[in-house]
Image 1 (cartoon, rainbow, N blue to C red):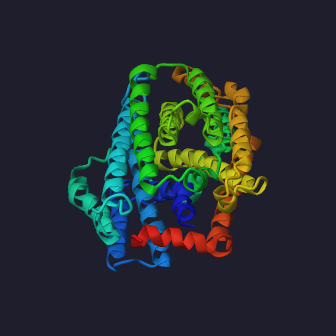
Image 2: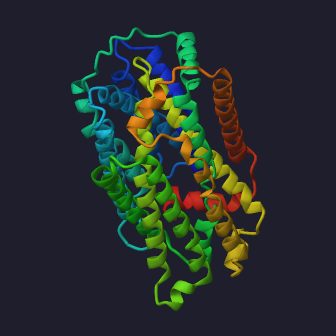
Image 3: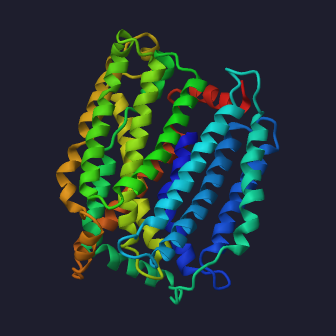
Length: 439
């Protein structure tokens, strides 16, 4: 429930884009909302700090609110970068965005390391109570971020604010362009079919006996390699063919995903490789590959945003991508009913459902590569595609219908998880109490 609630705000980024493009505050479209988002994040953490151990309902509610605040600030950050990217040459378009993601991924790495260190009750005697963790979460942006916001320069785009109707009409006209709907069709299908074994974490904990600290170490190493992946793309593959990057990244990710079978059957131990080492290596490589593959589409989005609608358009494109990823998560979760991968079955040593699910997900992932020709080869190819100014009405209709339908599915699934899904409720409650109470 907690992770479902945290994922919901990522799928509604376009709403924040509408706010900033349609409702400027004192003539400013980004800074006021940027500060508001971080204030919401900070305040939510400070409220969670008040009780010694917040209730489950309180924890879920304010984690949702703080995530929504963070996403509001995130959309403003993206819009600021898109506006500034217009001053880059065609050859260097995306350089500023790449640097922004390098900084962001570095921050995620530091956060993963600090989080694992300060809240490791099971392995070390030293740990911080959860209320102090919430305090640190809120205090860091309060001390180091908000004081410098007044010095943040917001560019004058010389674009008059649009009303809601005009913004919707411009968005609809944008998605009718072949340069938009064609590559975004690939992005949606590709992301929706990148399925993962939803029972994998259960397998690591119940089947292989991984502790919270071991999982934290794997997460830290994954964050570090994702940061290296972003830097690797900027350094070595920035001018590479986007299709080639997608093809090889997907092929390598498929091989690694199928490598989960080695861990399930214990073949790594026969080779003298401990489970934690093999699992860490597997996750680290996947995170590295995903990071390398991440930037080409973000750079492509830059060229699709019309002046004056940077916040809404970029948020819509990233929401489209996030929704497809959310759909993949829902499909992955639904597949757990096809094979028995319950915690009880895994704890009894029956891994037959786990390896079948891993095999199925691994084989599905490469299928979208048959549609790889839908995306441009590079920025020059994208510019040629944009020269086609003909609008395809029904392509725009399908685009928006799919987006609204996926939003609805995501919202309904989230409501179901929060209010109606009672399967394993006691186990979930114990796990969440362990997280928020330290027991």
